[in-house]
Length: 416
Ligand code: PMP
Image (spheres, rainbow, N blue to C red):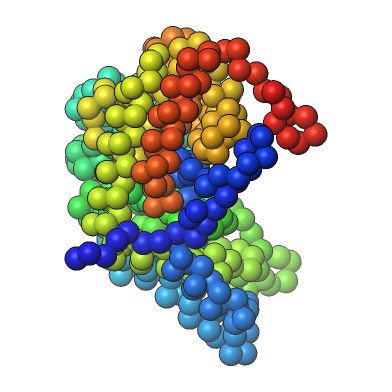
């Protein structure tokens, strides 16, 4: 019962400030990528001496690697609550997973989605119907219901939690509407999966897409989990070794069965193992992970509330349920400048910009004051309470100083 949340690597790492001093890095940038879990590092370390080509050799390391790789499919199924028949395709990331599904749709498929999504969810669907995200989450259900009653669709694309505002979408209610109209649902769980359990069955979605690097594993690996029929019927969009059963004379190709037909090239067995171990570790510690984050999020929002001229962005209002992500604008201070000063003077990592969700940020930041960029602070297992307090102090100083703070990069170093 006293067990804390899982440890990450790099905690307490020191980073240089502009004056040359070293300071404990304040990681408020988990929504970009999360640090690896200690359990992930141990698992990778154990596999490194043994990895070899998956499905490509009879030697012991190849057999070990093949076993590790195929077992990871079970870990991913368990992590998202999918049944034993669900297909698990290992991809590079969520972007790759959603692009793959877009290529695998039946040829006449029509797609519906809300317009404030991350570009990875927004852009792969040519000719999709984009619904304007309403101001209240409850209204999203009616908006979708009306759109599908007017014209049915084959697939509805939903996001579990916004990477801009952290707000959690009413996925179960939306999926119920989609199914009532005969549409399948794909959930972009990139931002939800690191924070809360994602259960395909409880949420009633069909496919889940996620990224390892947001889930406390390193880069280069993601997954698409869901029914295998469309994936089995679709030609691979990336072709090469592993995707084929036979290449006959005259280039007559018989593709492998799904999921292998969508995993051409030598598989990233170390990355896949890392992601699977991250999933298993999180799944064994949800209570601690969620409690840790809720404490930090409350502390973060109270620190931000004491910064004059700070406006939080929200799709559905300040009180809507959210994971540990908060974006904001500052009166009179450019987001890029704020992020640079936070790093250079305080050793704090945040992100600034439009977070690959330009429509959402333009709409929400524009509502505040016509900004097109924001600052995003996101907490997770690599964040300590002191980091949040430091951000609050740093922002108050920054706002008091105003736009006079000016930095540029000279020879790769920040210079006042
Ligand atoms: N969707 C959401 C909600 C995200 O937060 C992200 C990553 N920021 C993506 C999709 C894309 O993930 P990746 O860059 O790993 O493909």
